[in-house]
Length: 262
Image (cartoon, rainbow, N blue to C red; front, top):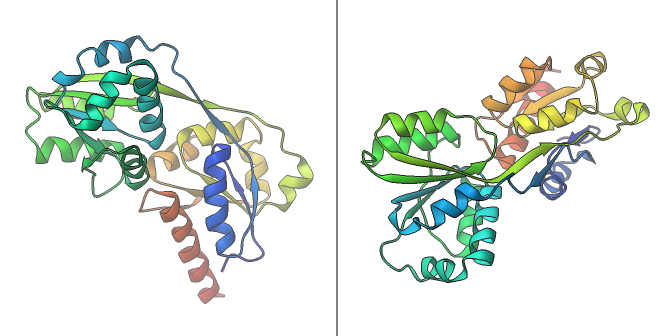
């Protein structure tokens, strides 16, 4: 369905490999531009304070698979007894909530159960569904997330009466890499999976260069699309299911529609 098209994928090296496999499964040719990288937070101070009170939290929320990974790596390496206590399910124990299936899988692979996942995989929806389905008034909630991120979920939970601790467990850094003009000439499509990938891409190529070549831009969801449009990119498709699988399926469906029209 995507044969003859050349996609530029812009996640981390690890994330690009996953997306590449999916796109190639539909016949596309894929080029990789790691536009972001994951780094440790500037400080672990908030994490260490929260860990000292971990058994007081009612919920721990994760908004990405990276947050799960870095949270538990820090916990296991620096607080092994507490990590094992959580693994054993010793009471009192917090419940876990995840923004979507990839985040949930990361949590379950470590051996923990996800008690809540929103129907639509958006960070704000995680806060809305937790606030509407659970009594969070007076509850202590730990939000493990990127150091710089949208604050909407925090506003939602605090408005619902939760005592919220926002704990940075990683940073997403945009990385600029050279993109040769002859390589750019070959690209027909670009995928973007976060606002950070938008910024990373634009460190390598100008929006005008993308527009001049009529390269189709595809976004994983509305948050990424808003950032892309604000930076001068013309977005062709936005996935309704905010996962890499959903992104690829949206592209495939759009391709089918275009072929039926032609």
